[in-house]
Image 1 (cartoon, chains in turn brown, yellow):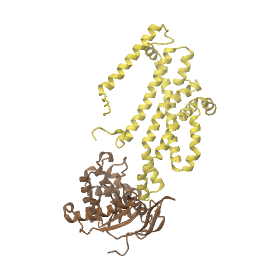
Image 2 (cartoon, one colour):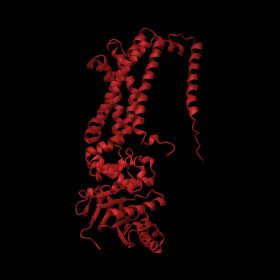
Image 3 (cartoon, one colour):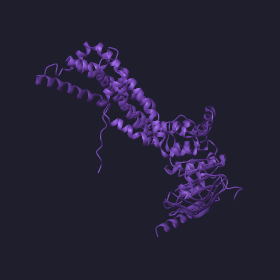
Image 4 (cartoon, chains in turn red, yellow):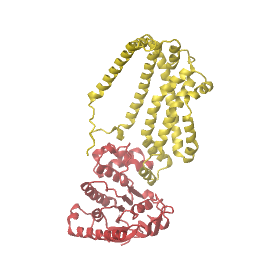
Length: 258
Length: 269
C-alpha cells in the first residue's frame, strides 16, 4: 500500500506549546502519495496542530516529522495551506489574489496573469476575475482560495476545515469540485473537518482522534473508488461508513466524559 | 422584548434638518443681538460679517492662500514622515519600544509651548509655520498607521510565511495595504489639525512671511484694530479652509478604499 517514500511521516511525535499541556502525543502516521486523509475528532484533539506542524508554522517538540522527504520548512514550496476562512486579501481582485503565490516568487506579470485566469476558470469563476472578495459569496471566496492554493501545483495540500462555514449544499458541491481538481493535480491531502459525511465522501483514510492529550484513536479506510460522484452519498454502503466513523467518535467522546 | 427600531432618516431629511437648525441658529443670533443691546463691534450680525468678508475679500483670499500653502506643506511633511516613522516602528519591536514612549512625550507637550522655540530655531516665516503644522499633525498619523501595521490578520501572515515571502514582501504587499484604512484615518485627523497648526503658527510668527501674512496674521491684525466683523469673517474663512482639507482627504479615502473596504459596503451587496 505504501509508496516508495511517504509524503508525510510522523514518528512518535509529541507537541506542546512551551511548558503547557501535551497537545499531541505519540503520533505515528505515514501519508502515502495520493492519500486523502481526513482528521476528525473532538475539539482539543490537536487536528489543526497537525497541519501547523506539517506546514512548518509551528515546530515539533519531540519525535520526528518528515514532509516530502525533508523538513517541513524546506518542503514549503511544494505544499499549500487552505484556511478555515478564505483568507483572501480584500484589496486585491479575485485574479490578483490567485496570482499572489506567483508574485511572491517573482514570476513575470504576464505569466502569472495567464496562470491565474486559467486557475479561476477551472474553479468556475471565469466571470468573477475582477471582483473584489467582498463582492463574492462565501462559496466563491473559498473557490478563489482553492485556486490560489493550486497555482503552484503543490504535491501536498493542507486543508483546515475549509468548508465549515458554508451551507450544506455549497459544501457538498465544493467537496465534489475538490475531488475533480484532485483528479487533475493528483495532490496528497490532509483534511481537518468536523463533518463525518464530508470525511467519508472525500477521503480514502479517516483518522479519528481523541483529546487531552491529542492522539490517534482509530483509522477507518474508505475504499470507494475515485472519481466519486455526488450520488455516492445516497448509497447504503456510504451510510454504513458514516456510521462506523460516528461509532468511533462516540467512543472518543465517552472517554472524555465518563 | 424587541429593541426599538431606529427609523432611518430620508435623504430629504438629511438635507433639510441641518438647514432648519442653521436657520434657527441665525435667528437666535439676531435675537440675542437685538434684545441684549450688544454693539456691532462686540457681536456683529451674520449680515455684517458677510459684508466685512466682502470688503476684506482681497486680504482674506490672499491670507487664505498663504495659510493653505503652509498647512499643505506641513500636512504633506507629516503624511510622508508619519508613513516612514510607522514603517520603522512596525518593522522592529526594539525600535518601537525605544521610540514610541518619546513620541508620546512629544505629543503630550502642548504645541503652544513649543511654538516660540520653533520660531526661534526655524526662523520666522514659512519654515516656522510649516514646522508647527507638521508637529501638530504628525502624531495622529504615526499612532494610527503603527496600530494598523500591527493589526495584520494572523492568517494572512501565516499565508505569506507559508509562501516563503521575504520580510520586505510581507511589509509591502501585506502589512502596508492592510494598514491603509488606519493611515487614512490618521490623515483625516491630521487634515483637521493642519490648518489650525498653520494659523496658530502664523499668529505666533506675525507679519514676517513675505509681507502679506496668512489668516493667523489677520487674526492678530484685525484684533488690534478692533475690526471685529472682519475677525469673524476670518474665522469663517479658516473654517472653509478646514473643510477643503477634510474634503480632500475624504476624497482620497474614498479613492483608495471604496472598491474593497467594508466601510463602503453598499446596501445591494
